[in-house]
Length: 68
Image (cartoon, rainbow, N blue to C red; front, top):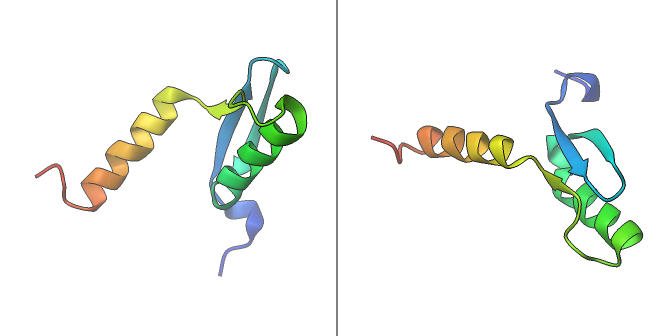
């Protein structure tokens, strides 16, 4: 059994705050939404780097057999 320290993390970038943080994949959607709501009145400012989003989508497509 793995603990939270072993959970994969994803970098979240906020250009307006000039910050980057790493968030557990399982908490990603909530963390980005909460940051944007609390810091930017709900505007979609903080986000995951587009290259990482593309790579995760590619891995999911491969896993689902959509690239065959």
